[in-house]
Amino acid sequence: MKTLLKWTAGAVIALSAMTGASAANTLKWGAARDLDSLDPYSYGSTFNLAFLNHVYEALIRYDDKFNITPALAESWESTSPTVLRFHLRKGVKFHNGAPFSADDVVASMTRVSDDASPLKGNLPAFKAVRKVDDYTVDIEMTHPYPLMLNDLTNIFIFNRQWLVDNNSLKPTDAAKKIEGYATHNANGTGPFKVESYRPDTRTVLVVNPGWWDKPRHNLDRIEFTPIASAPTRVAALLSGDINFTENAPLQDLDRLRAATNVKVLASTELRTLYFGFNLGDKLVGSNITDKNPLKDLRVRQALYMALSPELIQKRVMRGLSRTTGALVAPSIPGYEPKQEERLPFDAARAKKLLAEAGYPDGFTVSLLCSNDMFVNEEEICQAAASMWARIGVKASLASGPRSLQNPKRSRGEFDITIHGWANEPQIDALSILLQVMHSRSGPAGVFNWGQWGDPALDARIDAAAAEMDRPKRVQMMAGVLQTLHDDVRFVPLHQQPMAWAVGQNVGEVLQMPDNKARLWTVRMQ
Image 1 (cartoon, rainbow, N blue to C red):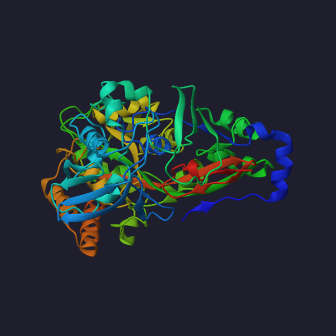
Image 2: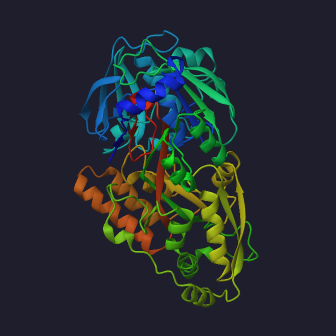
Image 3: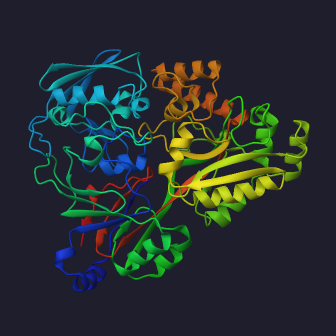
């Protein structure tokens, strides 16, 4: 599914008289959050990577229908079951004028696969990269692996000499506050260049006139401004101070739809939100100190059954989310309809399960949430805490910006937390299985924040990751997802809605279900 917006000619003529030609080719992007960093390897955030894809590029990319197509590599082939050979595009230049070559690919792959790289989990089968000649590289895998091309769509290429000159061969880490030159500076090959970067204030991109590809857009400039306040963001849209947001507040969509100078694009994205549990030996914010009650299946079932998904969908998400019992969206390979089956909403049964588990009076837990990462995340957590309180589980809600909460998540400083996964860039269930559900081991389990491991489940995930027969692999993944479903390792909530809003001077914009802004497709009127 994709949405392509076009305005009528009459509406465009009316607005051009108001705005003037000087602003015609400036897209003013107002976002609910700021960038984590200008270094695409510093944090595995879909939002951050989507923004930086305007500046940096990968060897290959997805087209409008998620087909893999050439980018910095013109072609590729397998030279063995574990080696992919890439033939690089000639004549490409970085924004500083340096020519693109195999040395840049080698340096980039080495940097992103470093043990200290937050994105190493995005390359679970990567083993080595070798330069064959100036425009040919081999990428070797640890084993036959079906999704290496998918993985590479999110691995952006740096200029090696730029990294060397700026002491940046080692990756940065936004979550751990490890910064470097690449945190605040950029030098890619993409359609736009960074003119200025002021964290929490504004980032400005200008068109790259030397881009190797044929532009689809007619932009000269993108002004990115983080506007955390939803009312302020709406006011900016209505006044024309911004003319694009990928996070239109759900509670204001009717108001925006009624405006004559704003267009709303609303749909459902690939990302599924779910509650995850700390399954370590002890909880961090509970009055139960001698053991972890969340390790008991009956307790997890009780927490699941205490939640009313219909109430969350109608009141918190304004009817725009898609309630699900599955961890992945229907379009993701590995999904099966039976994964949708939820435990019934039944608070009385939930209380009985707690009593059977030895907690007739309930217990306390900490609930870690962000207020600027997922749509209405804080409100979801407030609703859940209220529902859990009715069965005796008192959740102490700790909410704050993702810049503070994500490091706590990664350190396991929670009892229950909310998270979301879009299975990007693989568009395949192996993404969540390898990075979230697998125990921490090398590049696997990077986002396994719950401190749990299951060797038998790991073995099944590893087997699926090495299976080259696609139908068989899909069935293997579906089986693992069903096991996770039946054991209530997580509590799925819904597929997140995506709501964009654009000003009337935006003539075309491409919206795809990964919820990534691809502003190199925008045409202004």
